[in-house]
Image 1 (cartoon, rainbow, N blue to C red):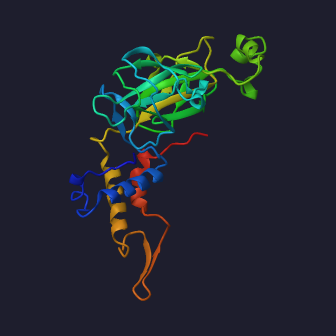
Image 2 (image 1 turned 30 degrees about the vertical axis):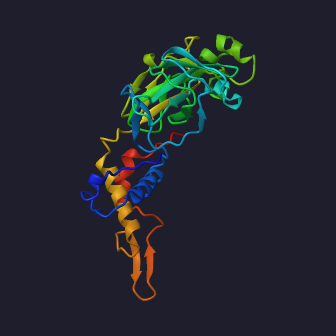
Length: 303
């Protein structure tokens, strides 16, 4: 479901009284592209009221439940599609019956065995055939700073960590001769087995979160040593009742541009009536001031 940052009641407030819902959606998608967040900046709550998934995210997969399930813990989904049932699915978030009031919820995959997927907790009962969607949260895999269990994520404000995984991988070359990765340490013994390092589930209730700095602090692993890599699935943004004014204003400006081809705006370099030529300073619908207003919501890259 694409983002939509303006409600009909906002149209007159932001100077676009004749806007259509289709134009608002189109403008909202352009805003998402401008800030590098295709999933948008809005999250939707599940039936329990807690943040469940990113509103504007497109599912990576969608399947029908092969059988009914009851509420409870460690709930098994049998006969799931074989192509879906890999160990990479552990820690993923399945959204059940998205859009259905009183039923929609986000569930964490705790285990996969054959074609059976186990959910850590299910709040509501669900009938066979209802829709289960994957990929509606933000997933980041990051190499952690040297000897620190700190995960800097790329989107803020960080609202909820849905699941976290850690693994012990091969050390940096500069660290191979000392510390927990030395040739005689326990981790070194494990590494000699070879192959891809195994992901280990981390209890998210033991994680610390700095929402504004967009950092997740992980507990140490079973070897009492900092993780090498971390995989975090999380939500970041705002509820649809608290959309920032800067995002609404940028959306309205784009709608205004879409409504009037011949508008003379701050981004127009040349306007000529003869032969009707319009030349922009740049090939974008966003002027410099509007881009600056969106900077706090822009994706942050770490090198």
